[in-house]
Length: 154
View 1 (cartoon, rainbow, N blue to C red):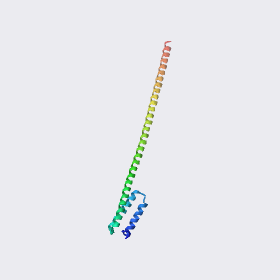
View 2: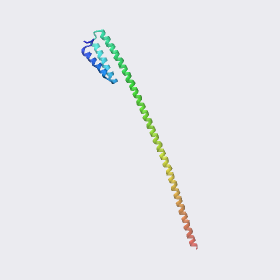
View 3: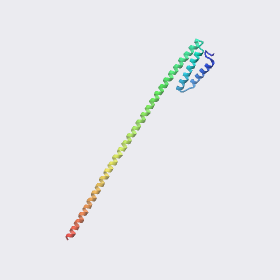
């Protein structure tokens, strides 16, 4: 036994500590700390032959639990910030999309208004053209009728 732990248990605890120190991901750190806490507890149950070892492991266990709590709180805060960022992105995207749809609708409405004005002007022009054609034909008929009448009378 080394420092109250078996050699095998101590090497496992040391390897878990090294894994904790090299891990950057907070979620992975929580997993490693949980494994470390369980290893220390298991070693406590296997080799509980001294009060000093028990006090040391309890202090380490409290330290590990404190770190787990801190990492869990940080992970929850990161999740909240990520959620807020997603909400901002969704809100901004929705706003831009709404503005584009409204702009498209206004352009479409203006185009239809211009088309209706042009159609009305075309219809007015065609009506005047037809009216003037009918009037010209009527005048021509009257002139022909007058010439025929005058030619027969003479």
